[in-house]
Length: 182
Image 1: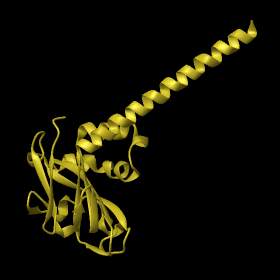
Image 2 (image 1 turned 60 degrees about the vertical axis):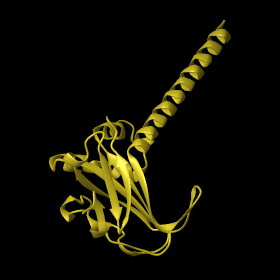
Image 3 (image 1 turned 90 degrees about the vertical axis):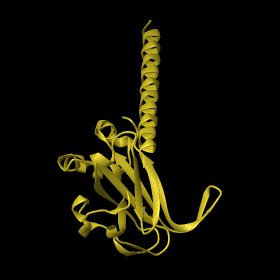
Image 4 (image 1 turned 45 degrees about the horizontal axis):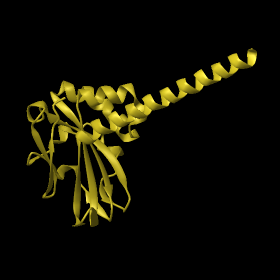
């Protein structure tokens, strides 16, 4: 009799564990979809060959962080990359400035000179006062290959409402992001 109870108890524990793992995986997939819908990739230099980018100097990943994504980051931080979680802390600073938060992850593929002053939003230079990350602690200037870092900056809400498009640029290269409708 005791053995049957033990087997039932173990079976219930296994089912609960499997259910928890499934729920976690579903949550992680939803979070990944939220990020992808709010993200664009900009290659600096190089040539596209099919799905490959050959000879690029750098890649810039622009991650738009609205309240929907921010809430998910704070609810399940383990589902997100560390640089996203760390820089999402600027969401309140962006809100006080009537801006939406953008996290720029950049990586030098070859030797590359990164100057945040060359970033543009909708064709306009990004003002230094809208860069929330202290650049003193960030890799800028002449970067060695495989150097990567991230900075956070704000885009005025008037330019980044749901359904609108934002054009992010760097030195003549640009990419367009359509802001999701919540």
